[in-house]
Image (tube, rainbow, N blue to C red; front, side):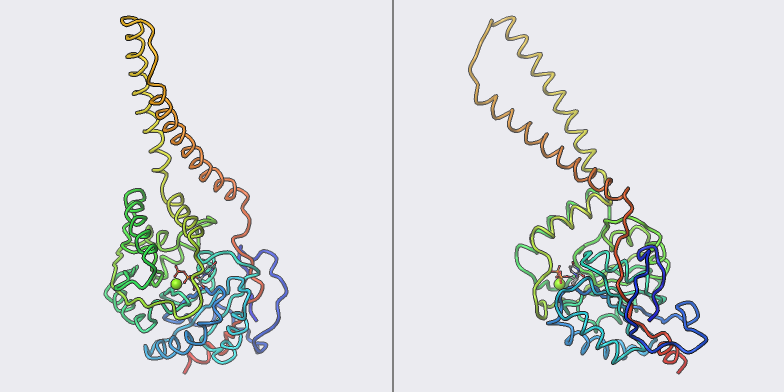
Length: 351
Ligand code: UDP
Ligand code: MG
């Protein structure tokens, strides 16, 4: 076992030794040559799909004939996922590394942890559920060979529930307007990043983020390609409508303050209109004398304004809440153990 000290695991907790004790000189992440490719996969309660994933992912990567490593990040799974990952690590210690979280911190933090541990020259992220075929990784790498440092993907034929498709189209459009981040398909996590981009991401300290958007901001020459999309192989989506909404709030607030500015502008326009209304009412009072009626119209206007004001306060709360959580500077995640065998990795690369 080789727990790399990082700011995210301040007290490097004692962890079970999973790999053979390294013979001297100790292999460290720094003196083992970096593989060409790291594949980072967040795993949360995926026991139903992991075996199928292993069966397709490893042959697909072996077929590329380049040095690679797979960094699985177990996001505090409550099922047998961690055991399955440990078993797979014992089967292929030369190319498998497993980071085990102490509890569930969410997909994007799991990917960020994977980035910190990944050593490859290029990094590909992938979901565990086989919705994106691992056989297509080669096509992403071909784009990088062509000089692009960020390869995004668009789901060719999306196999998801209709409301997910509809909601994500609407959100995509809204996000593009407010954040100026041009991602055709923000939900597709199969993406490739250069080492420079991942290094830049590793220097970011924010708790709430959306990895593809963050990477897009650092990219010099991004490109998007179509990839296949299948139905989830087994198990269930980990995103309920509520979690999906939270995730999109993260995306919107982390990359834009346009929503806040929209409220200032709306506030200004409404005050101008109200001032006009006051002038009109005052004039009517002077020239027509006292009048009543239109009570319900008044209610309608009142409720509309109240609704807008409440929404504005809620929106402020979203930002203030995040500021509060960021200033506490708690660790993003806690790693309970890392399974890796750098000796085996080095031996494989020396072959
Ligand atoms: N995931 C995670 N932590 C979470 C939720 C999800 O690591 O809290 C992982 C999950 O195991 C999967 C990926 O993120 O590998 C995408 O999740 P899912 O397929 O459920 O999302 P969907 O495809 O429905 O958007
Ligand atoms: Mg999925």
